[in-house]
Length: 404
Image (cartoon, rainbow, N blue to C red; front, side, top):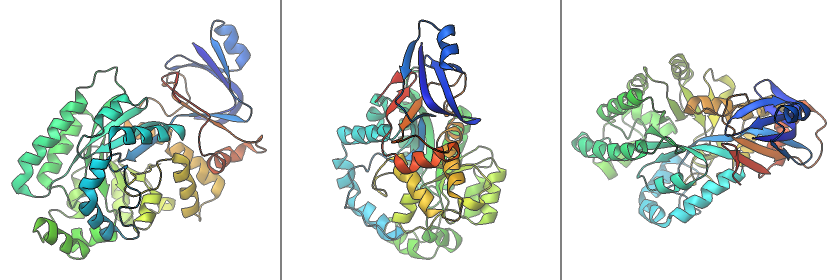
């Protein structure tokens, strides 16, 4: 049993001052230090530094580790030239991305308070790294394949990776999940099989969706920049699905759609009506010239995610949150900061099916401690000061154990 005390604790009721948390691998009680020490006299007291805020561990719902070798290999500024560069450099980048490199990026995430993340895996290369990582990992096995001739082969490979992630013991911090690459890259037959599989085993499900304007044009008319791309690489000139067909395939199972920058209001409203959610990746969208998701008008829950280093410069959550504050400049900054903290804690845990994300009795004892340089003068601005003035957390706990 441990008791941790901080100047402020971020709870489902907001920030509370001069409280402490008693915990083992789960949260046992929340009260004053004096009351908890009287209740649990044998507990070790952990006194955090002055001006420290105790948060639930942060959750990055969407990250690709397999392209962590990229620095200057890929082309930014526009989605289609970037995609061409990914095809051209893919083998070199994946080959250069060894376990040590991916492990380093997991640690970098940890240093920014990320205690859980959704790892989207195209090949399964990062599975061993995720097994060894101290963080909780929702391991998204990605399905890709638009050519019906190769559907069985592609699905068989996908199922081997799914079975590997499902074979982890219950004591493991890895949980299996399924990711659909995108509407343009997955045949409807494969898509429906994968949705049914996720539903059968109650696995988290995600899908890239309408990331670029080119994708929307292709799905609507089989025209635009994607036409030349598919003719060049896949000898195809017709989209395998359309926007409506793709959306409807997920009607019976809640899905975490990624990006959705070019989804129209009516489509977003439809996704909301079916209980879906969105992973918003602001830096990735900016770097690839995709635009920005209008979170101001969203009626469905969203998270903030880093995406991977194929389209970002770091996996640091504070970098991502600061970018979000700057991009969405029409929203009041203090209110937006609070919303963003909720998006990477409670909202994210609900979407990924994790029993953390809140400092509340019974929840898993995953914590991120942020220490400010000076005493905050206004409780209302704690979330904002956290985002603006933090690059790394001062401590991390996962399942009640110090992990940094």
